[in-house]
Length: 516
View 1 (tube, helix red, strand yellow):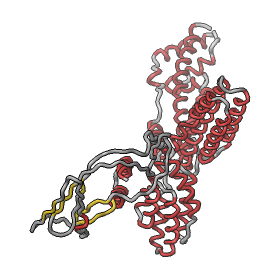
View 2: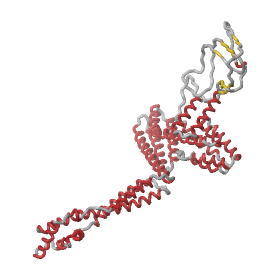
View 3: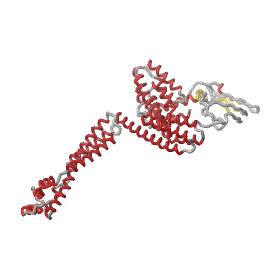
View 4: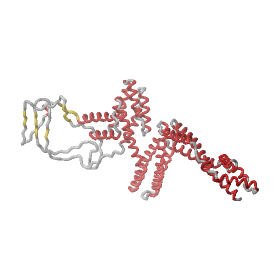
């Protein structure tokens, strides 16, 4: 190949690079446009049909589609003959095409033709004649499609919520399975367990792992972990050494600590949401109060009263109660409770209520929300002796004042039930309802001179003074617990009907619970 042939080939190669880049660029724009249209269609479908991992699927489709587009572009890119035709169409008037056909020819006509081509390409500007550019309208269309895909992806729908729940469930399940695999390896390293005990523990973990992989709902996952906890507790009782029991406790902690904490947090959140929704309606307020109490029998009682009252409710009242129960199911983590509330919401419209299933679900929720509470240990005996002096006073209706004073000494002992009553052995006793302290409330017309008491001791005396005008306060005695209960209900109702943040509502609730 002589110098003329080399110069022509070099020019064609330079022109070919620019033409191929421009070809691939425009082909990629077309391919991306089609892929974005496909993505938009799938996103629109995902608004109505649950498609888990739709974003990840679309990213994979776009990446694979663009790679396929580029591969197709390299295969279909213009060859030298096609490049020569394109260059000739940009002002060289078939010189390059003819010269390419004459490469290797040495006759005078061929040489003259090549020399003419060389002279023409010396003055030919590749950048001006073979510009690398794309259609701006196509670029604007791509930007618009990307914006539409983004806007569609953030539209909240039930199908998308279900897809997100499936993603979270699979992620959490995968994490738990990894923890089990890790702990199974750790069990083999435990020296304070014999081989038979290790084998049985690994069998328990393997069975739980198998159940987790087969589970398709969060409720199934929770029940599997609860069964695992129970099996490990039962196995702990059979372990011979104390060190082995401690090691098994550590295994259980590593596996289930996060699960129990999350379950308790979700239960508290669900309970607060239910109480907030039920408190808004007069028809369901008693059930809300029962859920706030520590007595589980109150829940059954409130549900029984609600069922009886359905026959007396108007259609509007039933509708309000149904809406209250239905609203409580929104964003609820407990699937069983959400299902029970939905069924109750539908049944109250017909004047019926399956209180047994709902009671069971609510009682389970209440128990889960209180799982982290630990009773206080008592360190002192429940009996004692002491000395002291006391003073009594009272007020009542009528003119006058009375005063009584006395001093005395005494010694005695006694015991009574209370919340976590202390003992030398740190035993816990069930709380018992006691009559509350009697307090004076101004403004009530109850009271007599019998309310004024005072006793003298051996060296003391009593004194009574009558005046024509005395300090009078209208009032009465009332039970302290009842007064605090009235204030608590009023405050909680006001908080629930307000737009306060949930954290502040919880703070108000905890404050008034501390007064009881």
